Image (cartoon, rainbow, N blue to C red; front, side, top):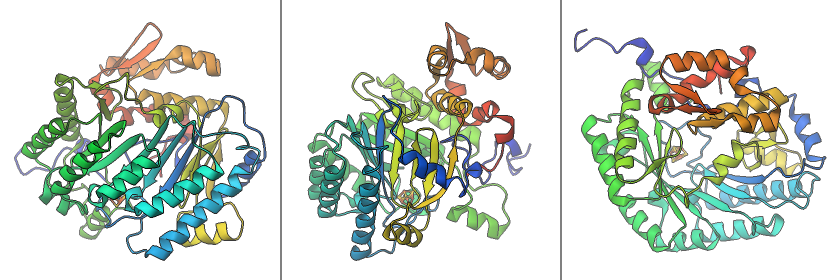
Length: 441
Ligand code: SF4
């Protein structure tokens, strides 16, 4: 192959979703099943189901070119206040339902968008309201996503004061040129400043997000990213491999120019970059705790949100486009802020689409999500679902064993590093036949 030949098709990054965050795929959820959600909220929960609360802040300073979330960059202070007020109306209504009566969140998560886009005062007022409606005093984890350029000392103090335990900094890359080309709002000097200030607040956990394979990423720069992360030495690091979903600016540009392959590194390169980063982090004392995460101290640093959700916890999402899972029913809120506001202000549940899962679908969901941890305990599935997953998935497991991606030993499925780094690619094989689709959004 000459130097100018295109990359092999199966390895190139094409448009579409690669990361699997739920099952069955979103394309099977429907508006008609919205009534399932209403009915579920009217019933008491099955005992012992942990509860989580998610609050979606859909505002950002600037839209990143690779972003596929519902975000708004043009809302003024009053519009933001009105939105927050609507999310509290939504919470008040839900908290009064039998499903949530007497329950307290085990974990709380602020995601977006950019939760740190809110002012210190907005954050304090919002969380005071939330706590008055549904007290968090028993929450073991309160996670909060930040964009480094939005943090100042006053705001960080307020974030600490409201009870945040894990501060997650969306750094993505340390190179200013790459940040700019990818449409990020922050620059590297803001990263260092924000990190120092966050450390001064003594958060229980500081997490750093990186993306392998952003536009114009190079071998040399990726190595520099690893060096910089090691210098910061955070409690945990999350590394995603760049994907180009259809509703991104990068995809729109590809469509206009007729390009089929995205202008980012191929999958093999991205996997290698994450592999190198993981190896370097391990050499510096970190432990790899999932296909995306390295943690410095596994006894102290936990991801309660992730583990509870991947073990079937209830999650109640507030705000536009947020995702929820209650008692086996998935649902997503309306995805346009005006529709969401209209529904909440009319006293309605702002539901866009929903899906009631069967017991088998819940088993598969938990199985594929736990595969992302790199090890799955068959005893958990036997006890919870009465299913022997080693028999149920024997064909797929044998095939992946032959491909050298995992092994089965002592009742555990254990993915090796190569298997873990392409885990999202492997999960489709475990879907029910009628759920195998390219269209997962
Ligand atoms: S900061 Fe995050 S949510 Fe906001 S535009 Fe960028 S990727 Fe999207």
